[in-house]
Image 1 (cartoon, rainbow, N blue to C red):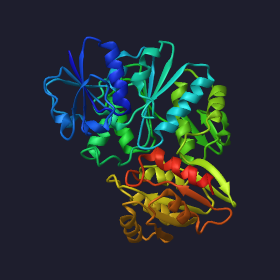
Image 2 (image 1 turned 30 degrees about the vertical axis):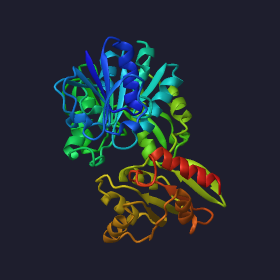
Image 3 (image 1 turned 60 degrees about the vertical axis):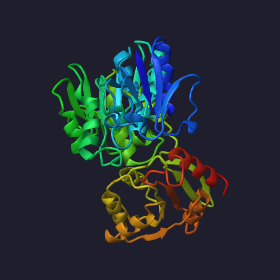
Length: 434
């Protein structure tokens, strides 16, 4: 059997290790469009590298694509497979899958925290940073898998999880997907193959989520964050299910109405596995948040600094801005992924607590013009900063005690930083050095 590992980043390396271990007789080739000298290839393994590598994969029985590689960019006369498909085909434990444009990592982690509070063995995998295929051999039937699923992982999925959670979906990754229809269709894989006995929990008002829930009539569908469908909802400062109160919402350690909504989704999903109210409260109260997601860094001279570098879409920036009532200095910008900034402009226009908007990166001038055209009334600073030190200096120049400096770019990071981790790590380092 001839196998090509297409893409040799973090997931590609995990794929190579798995297929080498499980298919010792296979002849494996690594394909990557980067130059060979920039890739640390295993000794003695054949490779196809450089521009156009993925179009030269004829003669293989199977091509294992990494998540970010679109299937239509692979040219082969064999079958196209993925680590995600392999995991779903062989995982012995129930899978709770979570997708959406924002909140996937937080909601997945909330679900894991609740289930661990219930004494379950939980494997949190997927787009959150741990390639699922790395853990497949360690999972037992009595365990539970919580799988954060991006559109890239769902592109060609052939099975759906036992419990699927569909959060709000907004335009994103349109520099990779053909169009919004392609993006939503990929997301739909989380529901499309569900069977009787499965459950789809979906956003109460997002029409894309509703359309995904309607892709099949198999299983049960229910909305979260509303009282009508039997899911968990929030009202008057408490979480409820039906006419029963679970716990106060201020038990949570993470800020923002969007996180209360995420908690409703997480608790609704956990209830499908028989978790009781006391454990729901214990688990959601134990969740401390994730790095780079409205992460509190420090207070300096009365100014609070928050790192929301994970925000690479405007909708995520909107949620972060709405999480606070104090005066905010918001750092926005980077590389435009084809996103629609209209909702962000509307949010900025309507929020009276915005003290200053600092625009950075390649998109900074275009955003300035866009916000001006949408009559955003606040002070806008177009920063030509080339380093995070300079970005922080521009942001803190007008900050006084009681203000919040919020890094929530709403854009990709690759113009100035290696990735959103690097962007957030540098912000944290600079702020801690003030």
